[in-house]
Length: 143
Image (cartoon, rainbow, N blue to C red):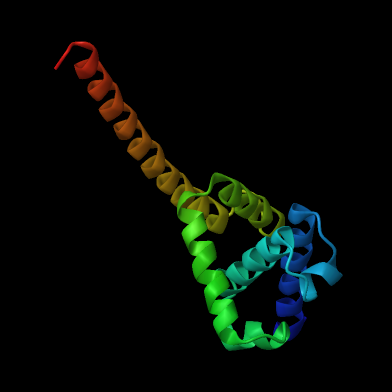
């Protein structure tokens, strides 16, 4: 198997995984539709191509016949969602698990990173709730 064949197999595996997780067709993924679920799937696809396959923005944009700035925007947006949006994080894990073997170095490292981010969000929420409880307690006590 040549390197190009291996790369194409990885590309196909990712493409199929994204379509499966988002419940869309290959034509929708590669088409020009701007409905939210399809845009979310494309965003995930671009993010994976960039993060795990190290494809340049220009290469990704040429495959999808779009401006590379659009791909940059999608990747940055996805990175932001990965910091806070649990649904996006779960979709990412599902795609990753379909593409890579379960419990490989890549998946375990990724899962640790995602869980650490989730812990930060949870701890921040706990702090806000404690602050709110303290405030309400002070109001109740007449302070």
